[in-house]
Amino acid sequence: MDAQQVSSQSTEGEKLAIGLDIGGSFTKLGLVNQHGEIRMARSFPTRSTHFDRDRFFSQLMLEIEALINSAGGPIIGIGACFLGWIDQDRTGPFLCMNLPELHGVNIRGMLERQFNLPVVVNDDTNAHTLAEYTYGRGRGARRFLALAMGTGLAAGIVLNGQLMRFTGGCAGDTGHLILRPDSPITCSAGCHGCGEAFIGTAGIERTAQEVYGKQMSAKEVISAARNGEEPAVRVMREIGGYTGELLASLAPIFLPEVICLVGGTARAGEPLLDAARARFEMLVGAYHRNYARLAGDYYHGVRIELGELTGETGVIGSTVELFEHL
Figure 1 (cartoon, rainbow, N blue to C red):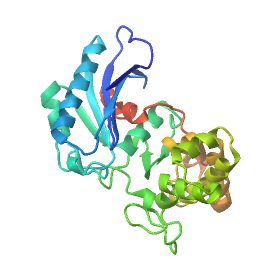
Figure 2: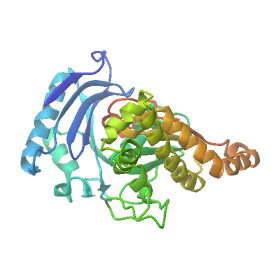
Figure 3: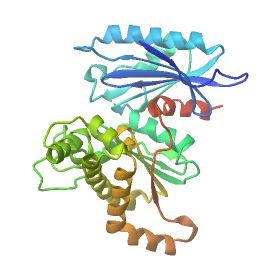
């Protein structure tokens, strides 16, 4: 277990919730206030060589209890997010790609019984989207799209303040939109030439192998690009071009006012963003300007930005709906 004090101690009258981001490698937890600030953060490995479900939940309950004890006041509820599709009643994942052992587990009921607190469950893309929409670049947007970029790829959509939840509790499996139908390159789910195959971490590492002539992790490439290392910048510009193509196909469907790049890949910064903007502009820039000119107050055009929030947006976003009920 790792514990970290992230920001100053809670102030009198401050509302606090517990956010959980349950990932395939690590589970992250935090005490979050109504301003989207993490007061205390904890984390522990989700699995070692294999996943022991009973041991995992025992550890999770201990970590939550530790956060409750450190809060110094009442907790309004617990929010949890996963990489996966959430069942219709939002009790837990019915399809959890990185932790199939959690399929069908009523995690909401388990937490409610243990802690006697309200619990909300989301997929992780929705959590990232809610965090950025509520506390970051999406504030005030009527239509907002967040592209979560990491090992996988998916978009969360907010329309008039409401998350879109039409497939597995989220806005469809948008990362599998096909960019290169004749490509032999596949994603981990088996799609040929889809966005995730080119933009996910496997795509970054494949492109880096071509540019550097050696194997590099996506994390290394992203960090090097952020620091201006030229080969890494070239890699992330190529990834940004694919990103711009994906967004060019999604934007006419959802007509967002703001598109935000979030997740670990977005930390590459300007090389990724500039290339995505340039490719988007080349493909559909005139389309969006024409609609903005003709649509009056309904639509004012679109802008593409990097996420404003740093840190654990899954932890923050998982608590947003709890504070909405205050």
